Every structure is written in C-alpha cells, then in structure tokens.
Length: 242
Image 1 (cartoon, one colour):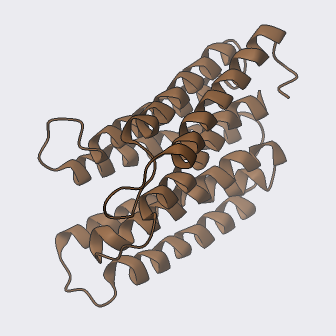
Image 2 (image 1 turned 60 degrees about the vertical axis):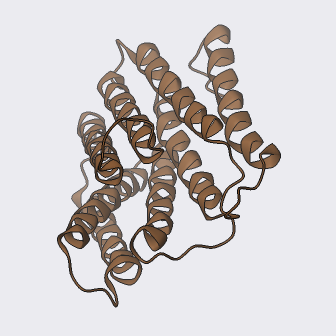
Image 3 (image 1 turned 90 degrees about the vertical axis):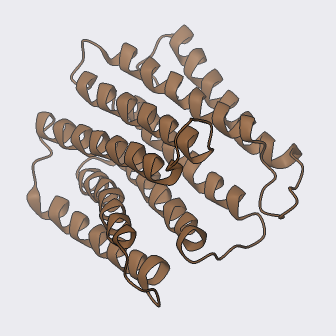
C-alpha cells in the first residue's frame, strides 16, 4: 500500500485511515440509538472522523510537495477542510442561524476545489481526451438533475431554495463527472470517482428529509456511512496518484 512513501509515511497514513474508520464505524457499532431511532453515531465521533480526514488531506499535500501532484493535493486538502467546516455547520456547532445554507455553501466551495483539482491534474498529466470527460460529466449531470427532481422538487411548490438545491446537486454531480472522466483515462483516479459518487448519494439521502420530511430507521447513520467513505476516497486519491 502506497509504495511511493517511506515506511514512516506509510505508517502515518495507515494509522490515520484506521483512526478514521474506528471513529466512524466504531461510533455506529457502539453508539446508542437516539430517541427518534435515526442515529447511533455520537456527534463527537462524526466530527472527529471528519477532522481526521482533514489531517490526512493536508498530510498528503505535504508529502506531494515538489511533485507534479502538489497542486492537486493542495486543492483536495482545501476541499476537505471546507467539507469539515460544512459538517460543523450541519451539526449546529457554529453560531449561525442558517446552518443548512451555510453548510451547503461550505460543501459547494469544497467541491469547486475538488473539480479544479481534478481538471488541473488532468491537464498536467496528459488526460486531455474530451470525449470521456464530457460524456461522464454529462451523464452525472443528468443523474444530478433526475435525483434533484424526484427527491427535492417533485410534488412541491417551487421556492427559491429548490433552485439553490439544484445548483448544489449539479456541482456535486460535476465532481463525480470530472473524476469519472479522468478515471476512464487513468485508473488510479477511480477512488476519487467512487468517492464523489458516494458523496452525491449521501446528499440525495439527506435531501429526502430536509425537503420532504421523509425519515427512516438510522437515516442519519446511512448518510454518514456513504458521505464519510466518499470523503475518505477523495482524500486518499492523492496517494493513489502520487
């Protein structure tokens, strides 16, 4: 695993990965079911798992400095940091009144960084074939629109927040599209593509009860069990291309 790293660096990244997994999956396995039967994971393990990925992301950037993947690593680290900020907003741990909108803004800016990182990496590594990139992007944009329509918009009276949600869904779909288009040209980017797909999936699940009030057993844990691995795969994609 990670053959380009020294033994100490390899140990560090594996240790962070195990810590992240212990916090996320351990919180689910050993947490107590809340009164609404929607979550087992304690808030602190969720936030700590996100913070662990921030440490991992910046560590990957430090390791990548001086290589052709440095800017990619930097933008992934910026994106993950913004994602962690979004987690804090969504957990209502920051003193703002519009937690959901602030969270969406933080996640959205994070995905701008992810998309920029992917495009810059592709441009600097000869992944310039437009056909797979545009085809994958188009397919994922369609997925985003269809998901938004059925999860957010269908049966609802249009309000401005619906169009904000559409823009947000298209941005997340763009990350998946760019990553998939690049992965079709370089298989080492498959983790990023899968991670972006999981992120979009978690967001659509979240939207089902933010906009439609639909809740089911352990819904919050299902969101985190798709979102968390999605972020991890995006962050560790830096190691797969290093």
